[in-house]
Image (cartoon, rainbow, N blue to C red):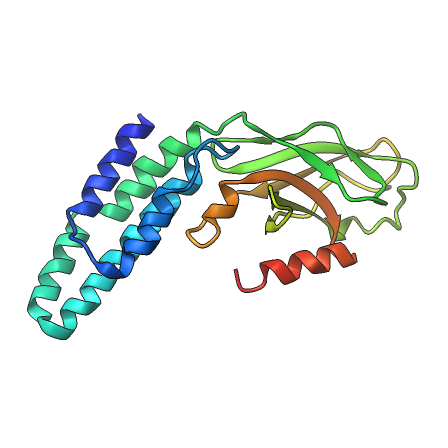
Length: 219
């Protein structure tokens, strides 16, 4: 099902014509590995965005030389429904295959929490897990500052999730919490998501997290 949807999308894109402006991005997208935790998702997203960018570039080129031909080209492109097919067929099919996959989870040193299990993906690209507060946790624990950060195999930050949530106060040892992060795969970070390695819960006031912010700035 997934392979068929991807093939269909590829055929739709190729029907739009070729443009030298998109060949590098398209080639890079096609070369992304699919044997990582997120499977085909990074590659599929990158290929879609690269193909759309190539079509837009071709349209802009045509506008300079033949505005009428450019309008015809763009009408045909819109009529093919590339975005609708991608969002309603290709992407859901690929995302469905990720359900139940696990992502290794860790806790940064010094935080009074522990994870009960690895992060688990659902069919909507959310990865979540549960954990417990350990000795040292109290109402003074700044839980609002604890965020999950996704890292690639090289130790580079890819994205940040939501801060941890728990039922009620007081915060104390043994109380449970939940934490989750959305796999926000885009063309510009697809290569990193393709090499997703782990998720670490960190304190956003720490020096380590400040390095994460510096890496993610501009992404």
